Image (cartoon, rainbow, N blue to C red):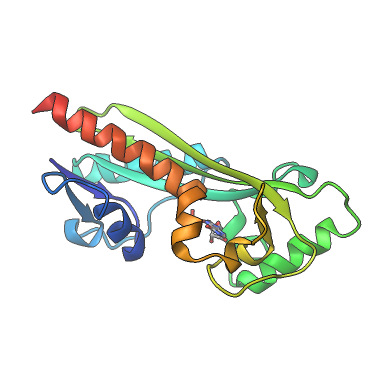
Length: 197
Ligand code: IMP
């Protein structure tokens, strides 16, 4: 079985490839000649990951999956959520996004937040299946740690004493939203593949 991961992030492709048995071939957008930007105009993680996977499935006729992740802060009614990558504006970076988040939360006692990843998989018959991964925690009022990316320096996972940015990649991968969603997808793919062949 050949499956396309609808992402331009080669790091993510390699990460999932390493978790799959060899007879499930994971290919990337580059491998199928898809160089255009995928549409991502929905206002939910579910909607966006579905939209990206559906675009590739319909245009290239290959089983595929796409992911979408957001940081959901309770006191901000789930913001930045689906807009996490561009919270402070289209061409701003992680530091600006974090600063805006801290500004909006200043004085707030409720710091509860969660990272959530939704993966949408569409199989060779067009059947859609979604997988969710989540990690709960809180937003600190200052940055701690230098590893990771995005909002990692201000996210303290529940029950942990280190932010995501203070953890090694291995430590983060043991509990992260993306790792949880990916492990559900991988389990499904292995089962699906074994049932079909
Ligand atoms: P994407 O859907 O994986 O591209 O993630 C969207 C945005 O969410 C990223 O640009 C980051 O700002 C944020 N994000 C996603 N995953 C993480 C994470 O593991 N740590 C910190 N921020 C993240």
